Image 1 (cartoon, helix red, strand yellow):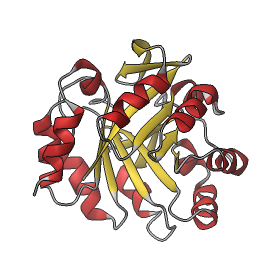
Image 2 (cartoon, helix red, strand yellow):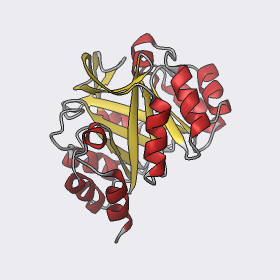
Image 3 (cartoon, one colour):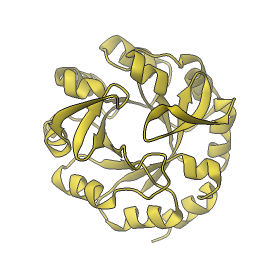
Image 4 (cartoon, one colour):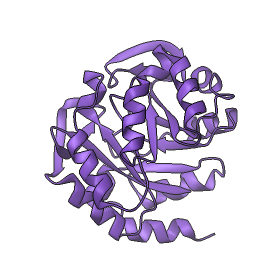
Length: 240
């Protein structure tokens, strides 16, 4: 199982939110590229980046720090937030991003997801953010009547590289991930599922791994707070 350290970008800084609330943010690093290099030095194989402002604006806002991270770090990175048209997808991939994450457009324009996944095999993921089993969009500000599993299944034949499943009520709260819901989703689809939201301890990571069906986990606040030591966690996950 791959552990993805998260760098959430707000106003050019690396922050973490609680329950996706932009008014409840904590700044952890004024230099996101320096933070990314710390994660890489600890041995991570991937980076997970989110343009929080972009998720609300519907267009990239924190492009400068993302580009600085891509230039500074040799490991692949995936990015979500404000990516809602083919031109933006192409632009990010041209700049060295390994994978784009499409969230809001997966609900509002699923044909774009299919088109992008076909054009860029292995480089398009779908971000499904959920509150009580229903998908939320536009930076989690708007709730829909679309069920998580239904949305995921609709992309079974699209060729997407992964589904990043975030339980909003767990995100940033350090209360543990929704293992059952994530594992159920992973069993319901053939697309690799990455867990996000509430991953706050090594025990959480091992529990997710031991389901045998979850391909990755994203953690942010726990790494910044020291609740998870990245180097130790990577070593533990590498063991059988």
